[in-house]
Amino acid sequence: MKVRIKIGDFKNRVSVTCADGKAVVEGNEYTLPEKFFAKSNPDPSIKYALRLFHLHTEREAEEILKTLPDEISEHLKIIKVGRNFDGVGLDRFWIVKEEFDNQDECEEWRDSILKKSDFEYRKRISIEGGIYKLYPDIPATSVVIADQNDNHLLSGKNVEIVSPSGMEITDAPVGESFHWEHTENLRFLGKLYFMPGENGVLVVNEIPLEEYLASVNSSEMSAEAPIEFLKAQTIAARSTVIATMDCHHHGEPYDLCNGDHCQCYYGSGRTEERSLQAAEMTDGIILIHDSKVCDTRYAKICGGITEKFHHVWENYNPGCLPSKFDGEGDKPEYKNWNEYINDKPDCYCNPEKYPYPDYFDYARPWFRWEIDCEVGKLSQIIEERTGENIGRIQDIKIRTSGESGRITGLEITGSKDSVEVNGELNIRRVLSESHLPSSCFYTTFEDDKIVFHGAGWGHGVGMCQMGALNMAVMGFDYRRILAHYYPHTQYYNINHKINTL
Ligand SMILES: [Zn+2]
Ligand SMILES: [Zn+2]
Image (tube, rainbow, N blue to C red; front, side, top):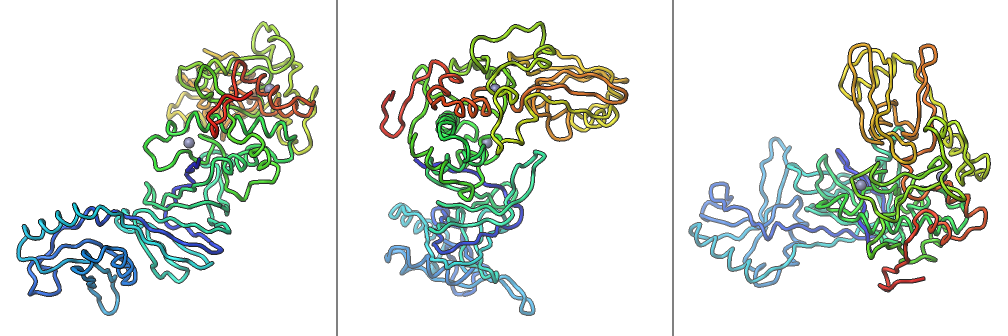
């Protein structure tokens, strides 16, 4: 099973370095033949002609001609079009069928030939190691692949590059619209597809599901983690991929995106031996509940109690994602969420009770946290985010919360007006320059500052990654971990299509 992941929409051009490989270009120009031309025909003795392909180089045109069946190609010829002005111009090469007396004759030939041969236009070229540039043609209906010296090699509606030793994309976008947004050179295995996108060139990577999971594992957490944790993480990632494929990006030429929206994926360069091992050891295993694949979400630190699906996303409550205490026994009782946040329950993700391994030092501050912001500054952020000028903030009232204390609706009152803010992720975004770590918090006003006293990191639904990690450190196996976060589930192997123990 293979998955296609969107790597990015590149505005101008994409630069790809390959060690070796081949490029395949697909198009469907043949099945959508161009109109007829008469006046612009370079040979005035010919009245009508049919243009079948429009290309950038003569070599490209010759390559296409070779791929066509003889009974078609013998009637066709390559002509050069485009005008040069003082040596400056843009040559194009057309493959045409000429010698028609009228338009009807032309249409008749086109229809008969198209009915006869229903083949795809597909060309292959070998490319040597080196740097290639890909950019949108104008108008952006095809992508051009050029070598380092800007020589056009091929163009088409879909350019595919395969390089067995891997490929590297220069300056790929990472973490778009989050505070860690930057560009990075990313390495890929499998196939890379380049097609016309909304902004320029859309890049998609196709790799086997298991290789994808191994990279997600390393990108999401750390390959240094105990193997039982990595196995649990891989099964959760595999199940959620299978459950959400073709839903999040229905109708797009890819299954998943590579950001937080789906799962973080930064190419094969991020894959480590141990995460590959975890993928192999759990090959094909997913969790099912009620004969349905479980959408096994996970997040970094629940803070003590996990959240229910419908408080974060749409109104749907899969039985495999209950809200539960992330420790031994039942949920402790609290008078209110302030008391819960001030308390530090004895749960698996509490670093004071279950110390985090050194390589997760960066997560330690987010079990319980305090973030402050100057009132004027926050008022300004709220205006930028909501478009409402409510004046200087005077009060933040919580309207609705989920079962982990995560706020799902609140009202902010200012000196001029008030504004309602709803949705877990939206609340985190509106009240911070980047995003608050979670929406489980209460606020206090101290001098000219608003202080957020919070718990946890992320949406809190499903597996708590730091809790699961600590369970593995304590010696629990992946089954025990998964049963804790996703109760009442069964194992199923997608490769063998059987229920497994
Ligand atoms: Zn997505
Ligand atoms: Zn937890």
